[in-house]
Length: 225
Image 1 (tube, rainbow, N blue to C red):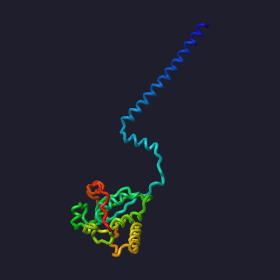
Image 2 (image 1 turned 90 degrees about the vertical axis):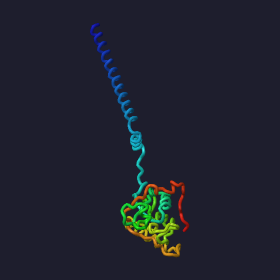
Image 3 (image 1 turned 180 degrees about the vertical axis):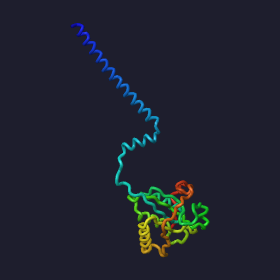
Image 4 (image 1 turned 30 degrees about the horizontal axis):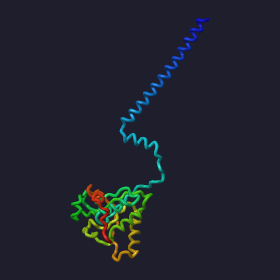
């Protein structure tokens, strides 16, 4: 009987040892996995990890952003026009460039000759849920003299003409109505000469023209109307 009792106790002790060993093994493996994940996270690209974390914690806000649309305006020297549109809430980008001519991919020097037919323009990218095309037209009218034929202030030449290049039939209708309303308002004694034509290919201007006034520490080069 004593022998059976000893065997039972030995078996129980052995079983307990196995349980403790299994628990210790699981704990060790778990720590190893956690350390491996941590090392992987540290060795990963910080920007990639940051993006992954942001995606997991930042909810997607619906109804805050509308369709991104494009508008193109010529209102004299594009430096001041670009700066004016960048101040409009809802405008996500404003790029200086050339359009409306015949020469592909013109340079600033090419356009300044007056032989390419291009106008200096600003192509505006905007969120239609935050700013309307009507508002952009208002900014356009307020930042140049639309009664000047091929000039704005001291800048003379066809490249400085007043022009609206529409991208959709809706933009065309809105621009024509806005132009007529401004003419009928009596603000100008002379007729408004702004051309309203379909938007042809846009050529982005040289990089030194982009955000030019901002780079020079100037607020604007607005002319007196």
